[in-house]
Length: 467
Ligand SMILES: Cc1cc2nc3c(=O)[nH]c(=O)nc-3n(C[C@H](O)[C@H](O)[C@H](O)COP(=O)(O)OP(=O)(O)OC[C@H]3O[C@@H](n4cnc5c(N)ncnc54)[C@H](O)[C@@H]3O)c2cc1C
Ligand SMILES: *[C@@H]1O[C@H](CO)[C@@H](O)[C@H](O)[C@H]1NC(C)=O
Image (cartoon, rainbow, N blue to C red; front, top):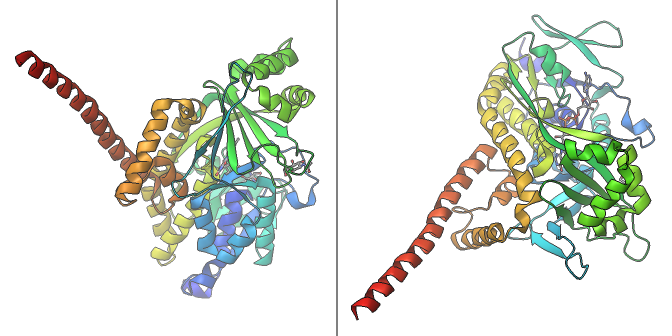
């Protein structure tokens, strides 16, 4: 029997942002490519349907920054769908740096544009986004089974999944593991293959704070079209706008330092003291009592980096999104990269004539260096966000970057942030290589200027002496 005549049964584990998109991509495949087999997709999610729930305390950031790579991945599946899903996102054209209080008690704000041509990243509500994707899945007839927690996996001729609901195991042609950083799919796959795996927690934690809408004509108490940052080196505060005028703010700091803020004997006094010294304007935005309450009751989140290889077991299983590469959030790329995973997987499936074995092998082979690259970029960006953005040398470098890019054109010179966030056509590993080259040239240029200055000075001195 040919592939075309029989639908392929696919299981996707995890109905988060990446699992939902993977399900949409496969369900839509035969609409955009007549050569594609019909994929019969079932989505398994351990949690209840989020659409049936009252907004419950989410543990993870309420809003996310969507950028070019993510948007590109949605568009590749269906531009109409992309428009519906992304409607209402708030563009952020730059960072708004909140400087430390000066001697006059002023908290100066400074806008730093992200792009050279007014490009922006976009703030979007995580819950709303996930619900919209689930609605899109309903519309294309993908079955989503909630309260299904993957508990075990068989890898015979065909992969078999076992769930906690104790019904008969489900058999599939292939499965996609999209079940997040602590992926059960990955864990069970490791028993059936030689998968390298590494995991590392960074020393920073995060805690969410909430800035309520303002009362008055403008419901936003700070500019909504910026990503707000209070860079304080070893810790920082950020804030992204929500459509209702509120902002979701996140405090990042070391676990050690946060202990006494959360569970110390004078926790509330320590929190207020920290904020009065470092973020006095944020106290006004958040509210004194709310701030103290947030530190006392909101959970602290850990930040973990994971990497593994390969990502597939033959043509039977593949892991995508955080399940394959959990990264720290400092480049706002986790979800964008997970969505890019889906786009890349679909391209490789098409390229291989929908031979999952070939496509998944090639995915593991070619995708790995890009995933390592973005995980590194994300780690390094903490320093950029938390301290370099107020360093005059760094700002000068950024200026020169911009000039060179405008003067030479994007074929020869593109600032790093632009490549990562606005140029999804450049794979992450290429981004790192191009940036290394640019850094080299820039260093030579600076050395040239400094060195040139030195020789000019020596020359002048020598001429003077001869005269
Ligand atoms: C503070 C913070 C800020 C962030 N900001 C950004 C940002 O601005 N931009 C960006 O692009 N990314 C951001 N990220 C990263 C982003 O949140 C993740 O990359 C993204 O959520 C990954 O999606 P996912 O679907 O792979 O995994 P998840 O979102 O973790 O979803 C996994 C799903 O699988 C389900 N599941 C787990 N185990 C099982 C099981 N055994 N059986 C069945 N189902 C299971 C879970 O319930 C969940 O629904 C941020 C992350 C953090 C922590
Ligand atoms: C505004 O939206 C955010 C994010 O969706 C939500 O958490 C908050 O409760 C809302 N606030 C108001 C006042 O509606």
